[in-house]
Length: 106
Image (cartoon, rainbow, N blue to C red; front, side, top):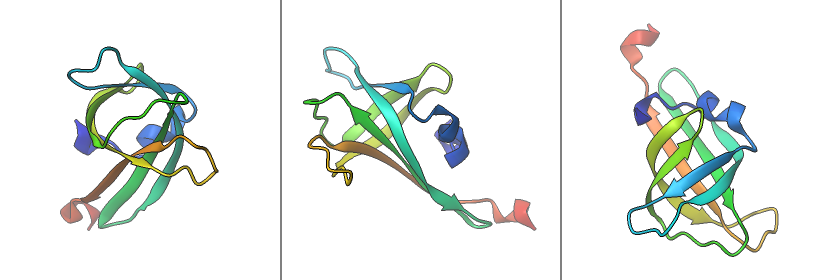
């Protein structure tokens, strides 16, 4: 389930390929996981995963089925964001933010 995903779920898969698919797409888009950033503490988990598709591919903001051969498939809301490294094509960000179960942390 998506609520089990953590920053460290993605980190071992940096620079590997994911598939991005949505109903109505002719075929899935392949994208590399290029960065995972964020933090976790006793009360909140916040992180984002950034994907880079092939040059010329543009995906509008929306919910996509994102798959990886080891992680499985998840429905993620992706937002195109500017590539701060100067690339002309956008990166696609999946942002995660949720409270932890504080009862378990006592």
